[in-house]
Each structure stands twice: as C-alpha cells, then as structure tokens.
Length: 232
Ligand code: DX5
Ligand code: ZN
Image (tube, rainbow, N blue to C red):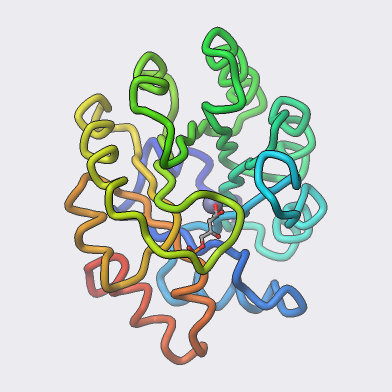
C-alpha cells in the first residue's frame, strides 16, 4: 500500500503523532519504526543535520530510501536542519520522502516561495520551520504557503533537550494566522507530561524522540496515547 501522500492536508485524525527516529536504535531501525507505527503513531520524522546549521550530523537520503523500501505505506516527514536545503529536494523526493521541511532562517525572504514550489513540484508536501530565537515576524509573510509550520521547542541539534515553554506563545500566535487545513507541528522536548499544553496551544502534529524511543518497547503504546491525548 502506498503512503497517504496528502496526510497533512487531509489527515484522517488529529493530532498526528510523529516519532523522531533520532533516538531510535539505528542498528534496528526497521523494527523500531514498524513498532511505533503499529502502536498508533501516524508518521515518521527524520531529522537531517549537516554539521553547519546545527552542530551535529545525523542521516540523509540513503536512510530515507531504506525506510521507504522497508515500510512502503509509511508517511516520511524529513526535517532539514541544513544551510542549503534546495540541494536536497530532489534526493529526498527520489528517496521517497512525503514532506520536506526547511528552516526560514536559512532562506532570504524572497526565496521561500520558490523553494516551496520546487518541493511541491516533486509531489512532496511542504513544511516551514522556525527556531526558538527567531521572531514570528520572520515567518508571518509566508504563513499561507506551507502545508505545515514547524515551531521548534528546543534549539535544534540534539534529541533529549528540555522543552522551552516560551515557544508556546509563538505557537499560539502562528496558529492564529493559519487556515484550518494547515498543520502546526512542534518538535523538541515533548513528552506525555507537556503534550496537553502543546495541543492546547494549537499544535496538531507532535514530534517526540527521546520520550518515546528512550523507553522500553512495552511502554511505547501508552506514551503515544499520552502524546495524542486519545485512546488510539
Ligand atoms: C531537534 C530535532 C528533534 C529532536 C527531538 O534537533 O529536530 O526532532 O530529535 O528530540 P526530543 O523529542 O528528544 O527532544
Ligand atoms: Zn525534528
């Protein structure tokens, strides 16, 4: 079965739970991913880092292609924490990614729309991300464009950091400027203990790495339910 390629625009349920595979066991990646999808997660979040935009190196199109082959029906959401996202649009489209998110901080304002069109032209959905220190005004002119806005709730680079609660104000402000068919994702430091506040601020796609993959397999279904706030 192919993935639902318009999952963000036409979600069958909300919120969507997006495990970030950055905290999974890389030697058992297929099993780790299959496990969380079977337990009620909606998509997989792949954190791509270049060692320049953020001080870490993680994964690239090859891992995305392997996951696409192993999990043909999974929706793959790639989060590009890189200085030059345009260079990777075609490689990730060919690797089977379904959504391509880039950071507003790395683009001149006049380049954001063109990159979004390039992404959409490959058949992927479009995400636009904003870091904690970046003012909402930087993203406001572009809010009508993406299928999803990603509000970072940690400074990107590593999983396992503490949630920055002040970013909830930014989430509320951005939600007020989005249409109902646009998704709002938060990423960083999210666990069942703060998920209700994250959802209440208007977020409908919750990313979680360490709070989920850092726990034993038998606890993960309850963690996914705690993130979602429903009985899935
Ligand atoms: C942060 C990444 C996140 C991260 C989340 O740089 O973009 O997706 O892996 O990890 P946790 O949930 O552990 O904060
Ligand atoms: Zn991420």
